[in-house]
Length: 619
Image (cartoon, rainbow, N blue to C red; front, side, top):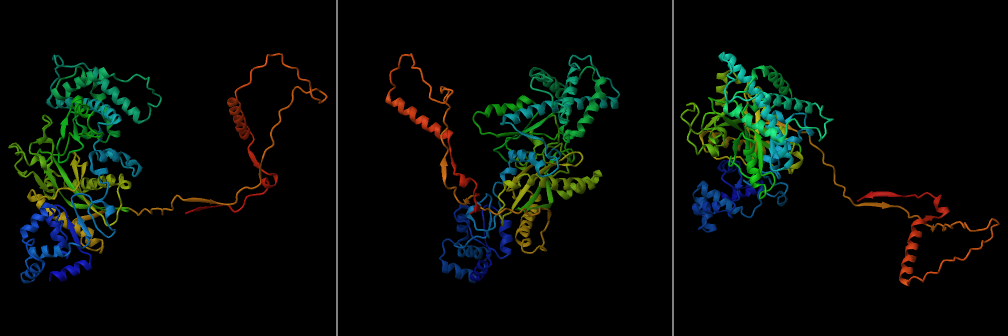
């Protein structure tokens, strides 16, 4: 039986190999008639082979035992040994394989150079090039981000932080006035903690100049034009802003500037799509590039606290070690708790770009109720690798499970209670699809478009108060560990459906693809054939060339009758003769100058004769 199955698998080229703990993939491939060629070089496979008892048996004994007792584990282990010298046609690995070492008909689950959009810096930098591929604005779905180690990016972030402090201050003035009207109270400006209203005028002026910059009205300004605020004035402004935004200090005379603040915010809202998520605290999230699973990430709301780690490690670390991204201060909450969404998508080709979107997703909650009064990771980071080690707060709503996860169907039920069920299908899901497509468009020419290659990615999103999705990051090799009942159900399903797309659908377009939906298939781009750079010019050489006659200088001392004039002997004392070395050098320089002045030209007969039969060939 084993020989029959192995022979059939070899004939149909159904030999696979897996690196890592993917039991769902292994079982699904075996069900399709595939036989695994184990990677015995790994310690895990060696232990598995040893525990199965086949390593101590001889080949004939193992074959006879397998034929007597059809034990599935023993049978698969035997077939794996029978195909140990066969070529693998399907690889599912945790790490990428060098595609240059593979044949064209071998299938792998990783593309080359995926780090261009699955790293924090790569996604940040490449999305800025979206205008070359689409008319969409990345600021509508990706919170602005900067690489702090690059000097120009660092300066751009400082300007952004200061400008955001100004807009946050205007929002504070407006919202405090609205709260006082609701409570019918008056502001006590006589307190010792109140600040002068000059800082409001400064904020309005900074915002006004920002609007002029967007409209290119600052084109006539030069470096000599005085800045709105000097470095010292900015430091004083930010310290005052911290007192107002974080400590609740009042500003004298702010009531008279409420209308001006409202008008400015209305103008900014038309040009700044992220004004709604900026909030009032000016909180940013700083991320170390070289770490994953939420390690080293923290929320900060003081400029010096953000720049301090960069200044500390700038001398010993590589560029782009730190990125800083604007924190979404007004997220959509479920029972007062923050969450993010893990959304899978599958890329089966980069030319033409082919993207599949998984219809199922799941939510990951933080263990503490949401609050901006504390910046602890238990409140603001939803990574399961962090939250699973923390104990859920007793103040958190009882409907959120202890394992901190929800199915998307549970979110839909919650939205139905809030009267927002329609927004999930009309706003959230289309927004996630569009964000993924735009992120892939910006890196399409940087990814190796090898055929018979696919890759499953995990995108993380957050929702704002209007249920608009905001892309946070894209992960390669997303975890498939069944850590909770939610992931045990969905991770197994997405792996099986991935095989349906990459194995079944590629053969039969009417095959079932599970919950995967084809959302984008670009028109194929023809790659021009390489002709090489070996250019050859063929033709006839120009013949019968001769030098020009030497130019004779006119004799200014000749007599009017044309006879030679008498040259008076110089009365100057004769100089001693020059050395022979100097004379030879002067003679050679004279010859070279004559050659430059009198180049050789073709003869008269050849000048009027056209040159024929000149051809240019590419080989």
